[in-house]
Length: 113
Length: 114
Image 1: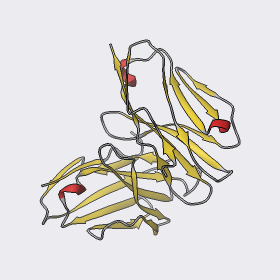
Image 2: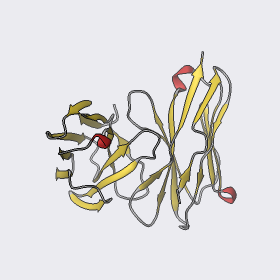
Image 3: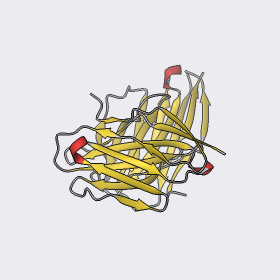
Image 4: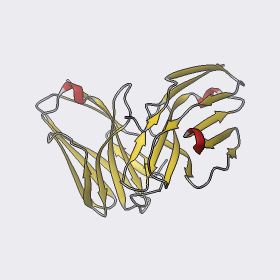
């Protein structure tokens, strides 16, 4: 138990569906992140939130829409995804944006069919 | 250019053997942090260690040890007397004083054979 919980653990969705990934952290951290992990590739940073404000969007397509209602919760809303979006989506949190270790959730394994 | 390089894609060792995972990084910052994470089959990334750029002292934690050498921009990770439970993918990562993200390597998949 890392203190970062992601739901669901597995998700299969069609290209026309709309779904959301949820991340919750109980560590009192101020920064939260979404990462995408595809096979044979480095982890790709998608979004960064600090004190609920988005500070980074790494050229992520608009079919991925993040939401951070408070410092403890982070969502990733998905719509009209493509099969190449199938990957492990990892949420992480850290005390602050810099020089701190990040704690990761177990990820959501997403398959787009 | 990739900031963190893990040249070893896959390694297999027999239980009780020692194994070293290599990590080479690239940065122009004088202040930075290096990390190692373990990703077991369950998926989450487990934090193992953080070192700052001003501390080159090697660290040992049980069967794990880390060798940080600024002269070669390397931060290698050694597991002594490997066990089956060490089987996982290991990621090296870099965080610079400027910017606000971690740069991860592509990971090394370690398999420990009983």
